[in-house]
Image (cartoon, rainbow, N blue to C red; front, side):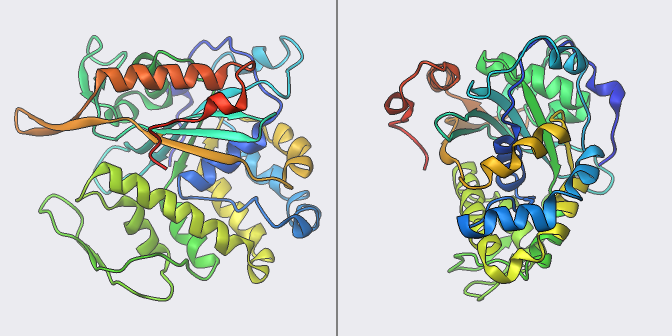
Length: 342
């Protein structure tokens, strides 16, 4: 995934958090290109000192691509390590002869003090205002990345949800293949063959009931969307859980260095490597409790093109949920989403 700093210019004045590791964990695992930073408690510190401490900084330095204003905000004032922060997770999936688009788009809130993370999925075909494109024209939300990169994606998501974005991270899904293969494959609960057969889609078949699935099959599993976006996001969450389990096995601990390098080579973020490393040791011990939600809507055709029309009331509901999660004074019990897609 080519870097284009010219596309990333955007004034940013928001405060930063000193707890970015949870962000990176969410980014890399949720977008199916995980770096495997979570272990059983008895292995966590051993793995950190043995595999990460010396090599991770170099890998992540190449992944650091700040937005304009990031440098100034770093020294504006001391950060509150317990303050909730927001981020947008962008999974890109560039195909031959096509511009890169955001195949996965998730607005997330991390609450370090409560060890909780909100993952709000935005369907890739959602009909939305693309801020800065042809006078703020409406189109599929995943086209924002193709037309204006990270900056346009951030502006578009902020307008849709009417909530701020402090951080971003993009992950190239192609890195998933090497990661899964490095771990010796992954288990997936496929009880019926999954066949991608629409004429305008890449053709593939994933056989059911295999004991283990390789990287290409795992990528196809999380990309498959010929049933519904709801099922697609459910498959992504299932994959994340299975990847967690695979990483935690003792046999894969010695492979984590390779996994981190693969993940880092397919990652761009405005989170500084030093911030990640400084907090890695203390946060390895605990994995965040994740709450998932997907914006609701209905299928629609406009001029022969498929769109997902978001329900306005549900978008307002999502705005209220995000507001609660970003408010440091919100009680943990009030973070629950009754209509969660978990």
